[in-house]
Image (spheres, rainbow, N blue to C red):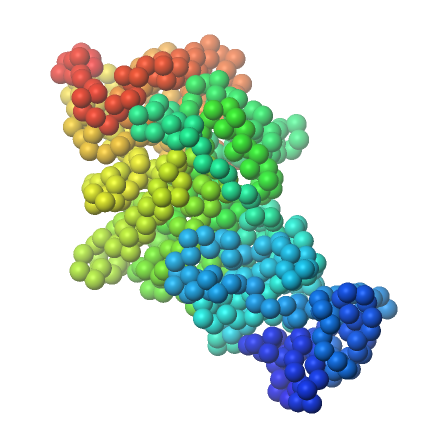
Length: 638
């Protein structure tokens, strides 16, 4: 018999090991005892799963719904079910989750305990599957410091008493298999901290799909199948290949004004954006982050659901179709990826199990003052594993061609954007973030090993050495680095009145001094057309005609300069106003000759660039470029 203490712990969902009490157990008299906690039930009978034959009635031990009964003989194969009558008079036939064995295999437990599981997304999260002959969903979440974790959702009235999970103490994971829960079910985790605090409901860090904001529940979704490696994509992504990237924020590229100014969905984007990029001659699309994020105004750079394509544009299957359309049109797909920090939203990773699990505890390490976000604790193997696994997930399960890693500079230095006294030196007393450096190297090594056709790009604005050099040569292992210095210098030059340019000629030529130190991408990105900076056209001097002429000349200079190309949407037709993430681009401008002319120029530059090996094959070799003239500062001629 259960003790009064055990009954109270089960009633209040405070038992740390519910599988030790619920489900089938050997009684003191040798008979099999069945126990079930079913709030709202009035009668429960155990029946054979095979034929429905009655095995035993269960007696109610407590009015809250705790039942117990003994079988006359052994448990029949393949098990039992519970015939339940509820207080409202309805009835249900249920598979008891507490009759099933552990979900995680021993090797998974070992690797999770080490924090070295290459594909943790195959183990954690919510996975629809057949288990011990029954269809349902296996749930697993890493919360090593929790006193109790329950799955709650629309399948159990969001009641944390109904499905407390099994603790796998050896690896810090909580797991349970719930029969009958299928794809599309909404769920979260209810977590009680070690000190007894009931935390806000947490979304699943490994969820493959999420609700549309402002709702925050995770959604059960099937695991995407592995996308086979592609030799064609490897060649298209090679360092010697032409790479001209069209950077896009999906929510503002185009909208449907006749339908409430709604976003396009994945299939509509596949049918419009992808052919447009191909027709314009771009080789790749780069999407601002598509991982689920709660705030539109973050543009995706404050994600919570790293494994879930945002539901703003449809479900995960729709995103998979979008990627397939890109490749069918010969367009590569690069995703902006954010492993540097995450938002403080209560349903996210912050204090996930009542402790600083994913973030550094000390705000001098764990809080980002610029963005009011939390910084991943990259000194913890499980956190590094979560992020490296996420990089591999997008490349392996969706077949994307590359990841552009956001805010690398903020990761590399502990004193990034901090005053003296606001940061903690590394173990050697220096400012370098050794944990972040090790993480970036590991991530790039895994990508190179598991998806050799894929590329990684670093948004990195400092003089940190060898960012785009292999790790075996002491580098970080990225394929490309954004050339922020080139962008800043040349835009500064172009903004000057032509009469003054002769005194600043070096702003256009200095980039060649270091052009071959890294594998550079020349970025005219979204960052240059927001926060009061105006549009690219608006940066140009002179009257309207001169602005267009300057912009055309600048694009010609860029496409002839060593380095791969990146242009943010709207730049290809000289968008006049500053980018607004809440509005569509001003496509009506193409009715004006000047704007259509810039679009034709970008189209022709891309065609020429792709068709001329001299413009791309030796981008990263000094022998691949030579000035005709670069010293005619007086006439501003290059």
